[in-house]
Structure formats: structure tokens, C-alpha cells
Image (tube, rainbow, N blue to C red; front, side):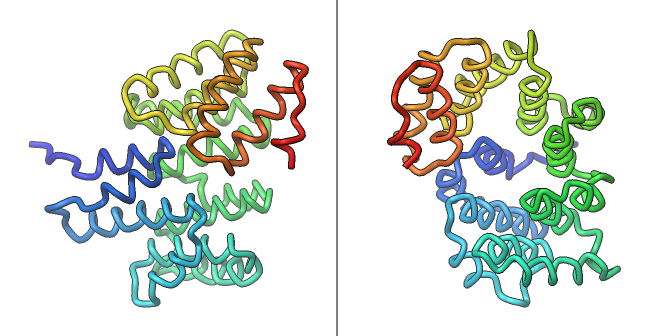
Amino acid sequence: MATPDLLFNLRNLFHLGAYQAAINNSDVPGLDADAAAERDTIVFRSYIALGSYQLVISEIDSSAATSLQAVKLLAVYLTGDKEGAISSLKEWLSDSAIGSNPVLRLIAGVIYMHEQDYNEALKHTHTGGTLDLHALNVQIFIKMHRSDYAEKQLKIMQQIDEDHTLTQLANAWLDIAVGGSKIREAYLIFQDFAEKYPMTGMVLNGKAVCCMHMGSFEEAETLLLEALNKDAKDPETLANLIVCNLHLGKPSSRFLS
């Protein structure tokens, strides 16, 4: 009999961008050691997404599990010590004992994606193994304008779990990248999230980008202003509002500054 997935809700909150809610709901009873380590990874990645890098650096000590050390490395990278973080990353990836750890490979992919070194990112993520890694591969291939390769990764994700939030998100990203009639399908995925789960800035931005592609700039603006209410400093929201306002003929200097 399948055991219930105790981290389902927490993972979902994280993937949909409800980072504070993920942190607030992280006290999940009955976790074994592996699940507790995954829970901690999600919590610290949520803190990173909220910009609390120093908290992550100070709370994860050198005796923590490899997955947490990897998350700490991302926090170090994002504080600006890029050289130090990449140097440690290379050292760990070459260590046969921990180099194949899926979270370490995921963080390597994220860091090299920030560096816009997509080939290096793929070296560590291309073998997949987890939905997180396949989803990151979809993002990397979209960045490389290779939607054909992104589609192959999505098909693997659909075989693993077609209804998983990450699979649905990856499907929407690819639909937006392909464009045309696919935009409507992407919009419906974000609409489905909006109906099932608490509305997040990420979902609002997803819907808004689809609206802009379909020429519905007024609807996009409404969604983006709602996202701005949730986080006035979110760069995605601000960038999308600038584009939206240019199309609507409205001034966008406030969002730019």
C-alpha cells in the first residue's frame, strides 16, 4: 500500500511561489529522517526565494546533510560571493561520495543558469532523476531556444506524474515559449492553479504573461497590480508591468525606478 505523501502540501506551496506559507506550514509531524531533510531543504529554499540569504547561511552548519549544504551554497552565491560558491561547488561535484546528490546537482544547475552558462548547467542536470531536475532542464532548454529538447523533458515528467504541479508548470512554460495557439493552454493551466490553490505572485504573473501574448493588456495589468500588492519588490512583476504599460500607452517610469 502506498504511504501518504506527508510533504505534498509543502512542496506544492514552494513550487507555486507561496514561500512564506511554505515556511509557516513546515511543521509536519511524523516525518522520517529523509523526509525531514527534504522538508528542511524546502524551507531554506523558501527563505532564499524571499531574499533571506544570511539567515540560511547562519542556520545551516558544516555538519548538515549534503542537500542542505548545497542550499547554503546557493545563498552564498546570491549574497555576491560568486567565486567562492562556484569554487566550492566544483569541489563537491567532483567528490564521488556526494557529487551525484540530486539537490547538489539541482543547485549546480540553478547557479550555472544564473551565470548563463547553460551547457555547464546541463552537465549536472541532464541525467534528471527527479521532477525538480527535469523541470530545471525544461527551463534551461527554453533559455537556449530549444523547445524541442524541452518537450522531451516534459514528456519524461508526464510519464513520472502527469498531474504534479511541477509537470503542469513546465507544460505552461513550454506552451508560452512555443506561443501561438499554445498560449491559451498555458493560461488554462495557471487558471486551474488559481482555482485550486491560494493565489501567488508567480501564478498571477503566469496568467498575465499569457494575457499579454493574447493582446489582453488590460486584464494583464489587473493581474499584475494584484501581484504587486503581494510583493511590491518582485522583479518579474515590475518587468511585466513595464511591458504592459508600454502597450497600454501608460507611463512606466514608476516601475522602472
